[in-house]
Length: 260
Image 1 (cartoon, one colour):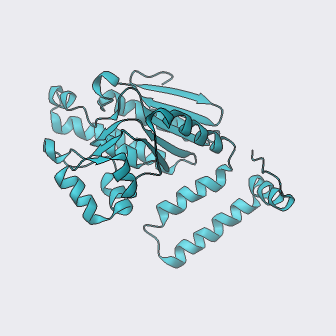
Image 2: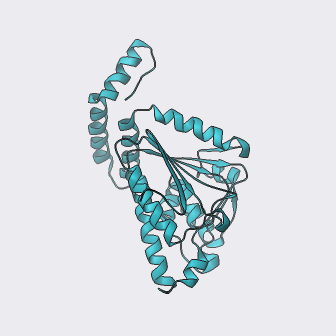
Image 3: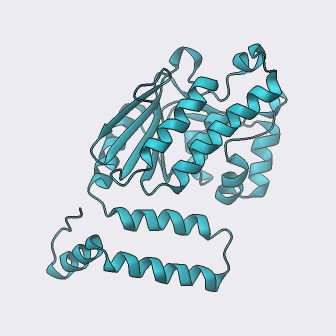
């Protein structure tokens, strides 16, 4: 795909920006958005990209799955939702395993799968007015979008159970206090703060950042010695890379590193 119906997608050198663009439907995820997000994620998983920004357009970040589309589907709700979840999950897996850093900017309410999407960022910024609720069981559904993987690791099992079973709504400040977010910023400063962060990663050492992402994923399944062996191999690869040599030289020369 070169253009999208439900996403704004722009590439600027090492920076890719994706904005969910169904503001009249609260950026809810229908089958088209699911397919397009999967395709957009694959376009981010390339050597040239260092940082990806994911956000929403309008008042909402994402209200979750499009329940109207589920109800109207000739496939039936079950088959429709399974296809939608498969596409969404492929996108999330790609974002998690790509070398580029993913920054999520939560510009408004995040519910259901929108809540799940907010969690997947390597860094997550939220506007002060943003809010977070699981909302799945309220509609007789169960969580998807990787939330049952990330939430217990971020906030613990008990708090995860509370959010998923009671659909408690968290403010951005509460979500940050619980450990779900990197930073909360005033609504009118979200764009500027996010762009400043994007520009930091535009000139960062890509192999270093991709190694951090890989180590975080592996740490949940590896034992101590296996994880340390991988750490040793990764830091050696970084040290022997052009960016590693530049970083070491810059540190010794007391100057700013200029990474490729």
